[in-house]
Amino acid sequence: MPFFPHTANPGGAPAVRPPQPLEAIEDLVREATGAERWLPAPHRMRSLTGRLRAYVLEKAYDLELAAGALPPSHRGRCDALAAVHEARYRLGLGPGDGYASAITYARSLGRAAEELLHYEQQMRQVHQVQQEEA
Image 1 (cartoon, rainbow, N blue to C red):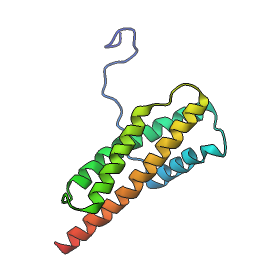
Image 2: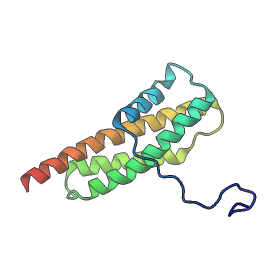
Image 3: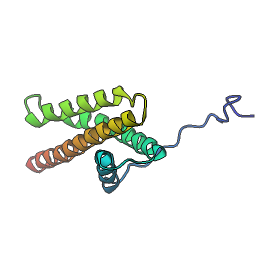
């Protein structure tokens, strides 16, 4: 009998997914933001949205930590934190009802992921310069 009756959940820890490679994220972003030119199947839209949500959740946290390590007056810090807040806002909106709303939500998450990716690369460069100076 499962640990949690009637759920088929034996009570184990959730599987930890390895980080997605950069090329995979860029492909997801391209697919999500290109949804205005083509209409993916509903199951593909669910998969795309789920992967983008996971990426945005993870990278928003990582970027917030990286930007928080910078001095408060650093311009890159303010921009990166604004992108984090915007991404979290978009996550909270949800897909709404209907297929058109799901496409709009996926595009929104794609744009948020694109912003986070941009600022993540920028933070990586800033931290690399700081390490070279030290």
